[in-house]
Image 1 (spheres, rainbow, N blue to C red):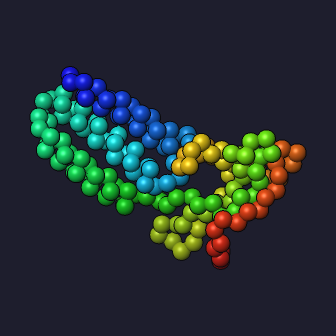
Image 2: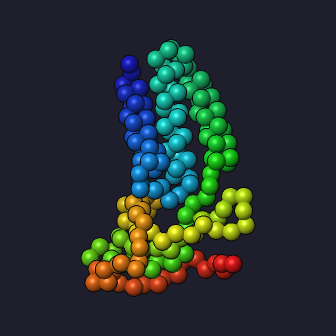
Length: 159
């Protein structure tokens, strides 16, 4: 295996772990473009690993063609299955000890209906596009650890 081919399994493992964490845990990628980026590199590195193992991808043009085809397929998958991103409308509370923890009111548009899904979640911001979300009941919130903010980020009229 060439030295440059050593990075392909590493790219696959990192992107697959991030996609699986996003799918099966409270980890959430809050930007659809970043999610598409990780999905694209997971699938393309997997196909390239198999192609190199079977000795089917011998030229740079074949690898470029794989990238183009997978990019188109991932774009079609995103178009047909994307349900929308949760968007924070109001930051309700901020943790006094850790400013990266907030409790937010969020909305997500229904894909084929005229309305919104609503939720109140606790968010721990890991990166600008990655966060850890948990369901929160604000009735039983310890007011000594949280300060009320009521910061409106997006103003939308709800029906």
